Length: 303
Image (tube, rainbow, N blue to C red; front, side, top):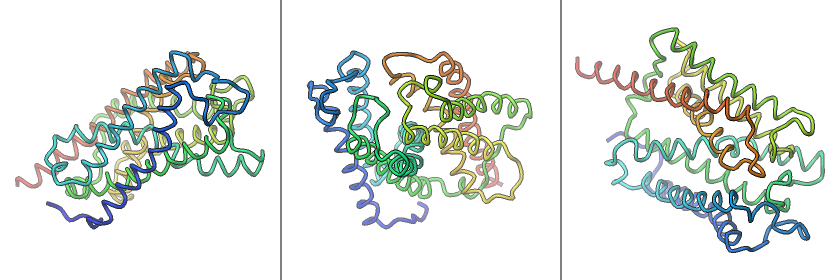
């Protein structure tokens, strides 16, 4: 067993914070599923909250919240160390990809929007009031940060030899080039939608706070791709793993999430294309780095 950088008490405190941070979102989702208008702009009605797409999306996200809470518990318990790697890595990757841009971008975006526009609203998505939008997505951010800390501690305890070795990129240059070609359009699309004029951006992502989240998603994608494709040891291993993890998860997950929750059930053709390219490429790039690095560590240990 490898040494942890969190004490058991700190681990439990962070896990509790993570689960509590999800409660406002979960309660609101359940109320909306029951037809409530709480948290919506007065006089706006239920907006698109009562259409089939949003009801299915709300139900799915409630299930995901439950899964997220179970993952948090597994990351803090000894039995979590004995689970097959994919049982925790896949849900953690999905949560990271969905929440990292929000956790890193929304605080900055909310401050900028409050200063420049005097409000923090959801750009019309669900007709949410500004305080509810900030509170719910702020809880997302807190959960994302707490989950990241717990997962980093878990990985350190279980796979510290792999972390100490820098991620190994694909051995063939053609594979590296193909991965970059598939990921870069995703980042370019996010940047375009973030700065696009009214009517040209991604539907449901019109507010300044949301546009900052799109910029962060693009930057994470580019940074993660560079971290896992670059060769050499000028950057320490752990920062490269962190950048690669955040970037690959964001690139692989954001597209499917945006398609699932497409505003007013309107699917953007460009989003479909960049998702089809970027999601498998990012997943392959991350898994390839883990597999090749783990193989190198195992071979070195057997000598």
